[in-house]
Image (cartoon, rainbow, N blue to C red; front, side):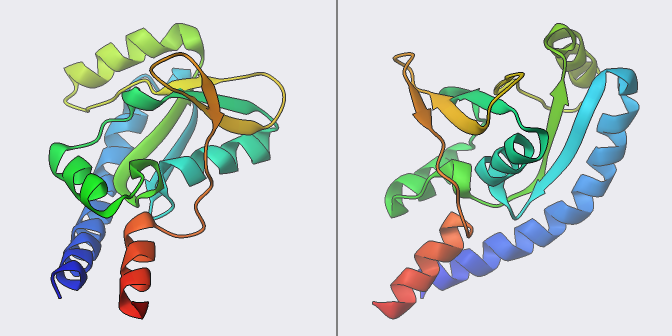
Length: 161
């Protein structure tokens, strides 16, 4: 039905964005290369999964500000309608860039000057493991880990119903 068509459209858009992200990777990497510690294509893993992978691999903790994740209005509407978490959606075309705290503002300015949209969503701690998000009230919560894309999970569930 309509949900299946929506998922198919999301997959097509994801494939197109994968191709576009190759260009974006080059543009992002060429701006202030010396300040980038890590550059990761989100693709189908979602932001939350990518953050968990970084925390585990590096033995660090990651704290994100929940409201800082850029979510398009149409994506928010779909998430709200289907009770999906945007942190668990495929992130085709998105990149996760990690830099030292002192490099965040200059790098964001450089990206903006070069037509690359970027937002600071959190910080990396020096020790520990885990990913946490801070809610608007300042309270930390564990970030869920997603074994599959939220939209694909919802589609699979609806097919069984």
